[in-house]
Image (tube, rainbow, N blue to C red; front, side):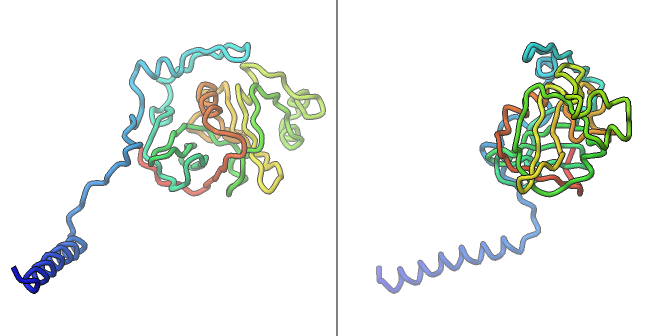
Amino acid sequence: MSSEFLLSRRSFVIGSVSMTAALAGCSTVNTPTVVPVAAQRPIGPPDEAELEARYAAVEDGGHLLPAIPYKKIDPKYYRQRVIDPTGEKPGTVVVDTPGRFLYVVEPGGTAMRYGVSIGRDGFAWEGEGVIQWRQPWPRWKVPPEMVARDPKLKKYSIEAGGMDPGVKNPLGARALYIFKDGQDTLYRLHGSPEWQSIGTAASSGCVRFVNQDILDLYTRVPYHARIVVHQGSLQTAV
């Protein structure tokens, strides 16, 4: 077989592949989205047995946290793995303020999503920061602005030393403190005994979780993790 024929045949095959690719690029046929291998872990709400275990009563740090009546919470706010809607790097924490969700971005195209409550202070800040400090069973020290709004809280003021840790403490079982450029933003991620507030805009506080969820979040988010807070919706699918 002549070299001219082989060259001609090779050119024809390459040309055919190129033409096929060009036609595919113009095609209006939708191709299915390929889910990354790492994202083939269970997606969506867990089953009933897992929910029972996840939100059961738990002892932590000498405190007994009561079970969460999760059936009274909208299922979209259950802690669950979802396809990442944020586009951020793995390890980033993302707050979707209007959606009432917080995401921890995972490798492989997924994120762990938590239902949260956003308080008045939660609408006062957006942008990027770092989780500068983390505290198990924090004291609740009421800032002067909150005392001015509700003088009955003076006994829990910074000057008074705050409220002792416990299951009734508004900061719950864990608190993560957000800083920007080395300064405290006064923006917090924290547990709360008020499970019924999840998915709502609470009257005070920053970003509230049920205590069982803040315990889980605490294990996933290290010191100095990057956090991004959006006041505009991520337009997540629910």
